[in-house]
Amino acid sequence: MTDHPMASGLTAEHERFFVACPADPEMRESFSFWFFDDEGRFGFPRIGIEREATNWANPRVQCNVTAPGGIVMNGAGRDSANEGGADTLSAGPLEFRCIEPLRRWRVRWNRDVTVGTIEQQITNTLDSARRKALAWEIELEMAAPAWVQDNSPEKVAQMAEREAREAAAMGVGWRLEQLVRGTGWITFDGETHQFSGRGIRIKRQSVRPLEGFRGHCWQSALFPDGRGFGYIAYPPHEDGSMFNQAYVFDGERLHPAKATVIPWLRRITAEGDDVSLELESALGTMRVEAGTRFSTFRVGNPDIGGLNLHQGGAEYRFEGMRAFGMIERSAHESLTAIEV
Image (cartoon, rainbow, N blue to C red; front, side, top):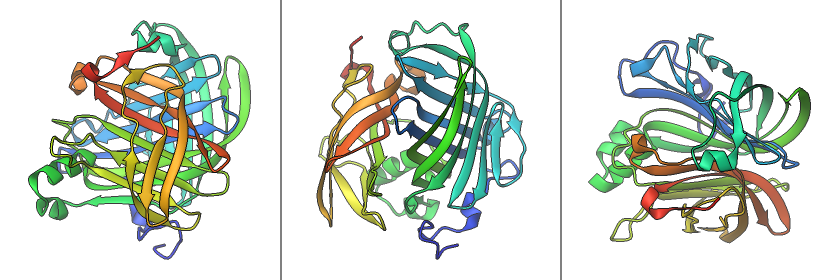
């Protein structure tokens, strides 16, 4: 398995889930993905399960889906874990199943969700009692090698204090992120739609203390010719130092990079926010123009230190190509302006 071009040194064991509650009460098992219909109709800006040792039987489930007309669908909450063995992570209506390690996964959902508009979500007027049936299934195929963050306790212990704090915000343990293609269907409002698209999937087993988290910007996309990119950055400190990790994918291998133009969250707006970016790598400068689409928001969050959270997609443009990809950003409410 480590010789497979998608493996990045990982083995099939990295695709397996805990079959028993970890001894460390702070350990969490997490799988999530972001996916966008190639035709721009439907977005899945973070579907995930967070299974923490402190509440092992009732993981946190998230289902964000967007549809034409500014419709947002939300299925967030805690739900009962469904024990499915080491190749499956499931809770309530959501299931992640490994079909072939580091190559193929299947994800499905079947339950009512809260339905409203992005404007209602921004203004906190979404009616949680307004619910509709939602079912979907997507099969994901890995389209690039895994991008791996290996922040083992031993490595973090050797870091300077600030570097260790930033690494801990990413997670003490390991995390992989991987560009994907896929096909699927969605049934909503009595109609079933077939689609194909692309996005990313994330799997992690780590301890993740978020005290003092100051915000972030995270973007990735896969273009039609097979090239792509991804990065995660945290706001710079007063001395200019910052957490800034990135890659550029040339269609065959990942090249380490740094983000040099970063669209921090400053506007809470439904769509069209300029989120263009630049990355520097051994390949040179990669300039990508982008505007937000498929947006969802959490506005006014005392539980996460007053950070406003944007989870959505963007229309990315690079060398004449267009692709829908993901974006997630957070910033303190004092730094953001709401525009409805």
